[in-house]
Image 1 (cartoon, helix red, strand yellow):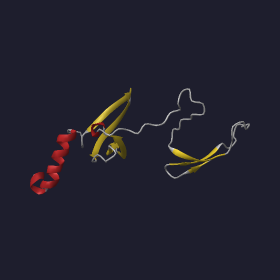
Image 2 (cartoon, rainbow, N blue to C red):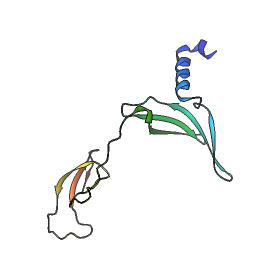
Image 3 (cartoon, rainbow, N blue to C red):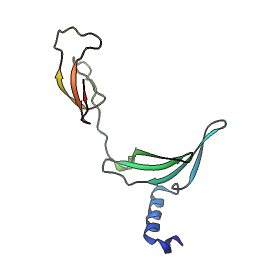
Image 4 (spheres, rainbow, N blue to C red):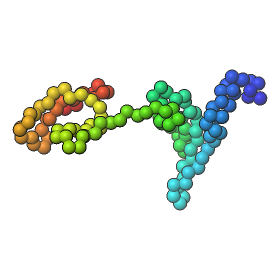
Length: 129
């Protein structure tokens, strides 16, 4: 009946079902401890982006939620985060990519806790000091 009324929508549904299985629309109960459980229901699975990210929409105990997850099948390599180089004096790793705009101290300066060391601009455009 669905195919007769909405053939293209039904065909797309069947393609997604073949690709991801029959999880869309089905509920899963997860027991986290005695007397406590969560009910999960997958609503939709988006297309994989050029960055290898998929947008998932689901319900958790009836509340709508969404999340972006890495699609490992996309074959996209993650950018490696720089780490401090062992044995290299002055090498500093950064958890967030950015650019040091100005160094406020120089070699030999006495630095106390809370002193301003550098001004930096992160990739998101935020300015930090």
